[in-house]
Image (cartoon, helix red, strand yellow):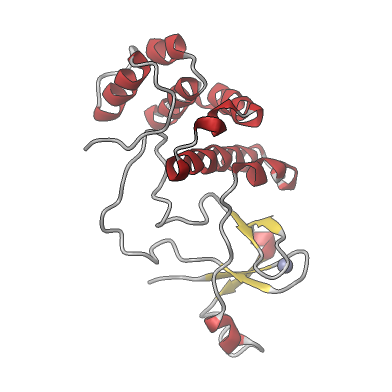
Length: 206
Ligand SMILES: [Zn+2]
């Protein structure tokens, strides 16, 4: 069943709806070198949302959760709530980075940093402008995240670190780490991009 969760904006108190995870038809999903969950499918991933009323950005934590749309049935304003648009997702990676102070745990901070990286990469994919890869906050963010993910025991996490090193042009490091893993469609394509001295995010071939 689709659950639409509703949050209370901590700034203005109005209700903000989160688009359900499976709201869109998953036909034609594309996969990218940064392993981002399809942007159309997961507009609010990771858990940061903007209030459509006042623009406040907040984390979709239990603290701000009011309940699901179904649970709020019968409450004052329920009918308006059903018609209300979903809370906005954030397009700009800089907004994620500026929201780091909202975090109370390291995991939340890592998710926001990941969100920033993905948002910057989406900006490049949408515009073709390589400028994002030269931004100081982009490069710093990649370094902080890669340090964290490279120690993980999960290949998918280490592959994030490898991709971040490629994004900031540390090709030797990227290739050295890749050579420790068995070949997969992802690792082969990352290796080819690194050998070609390419830093940009790209769509993976199946
Ligand atoms: Zn608000």
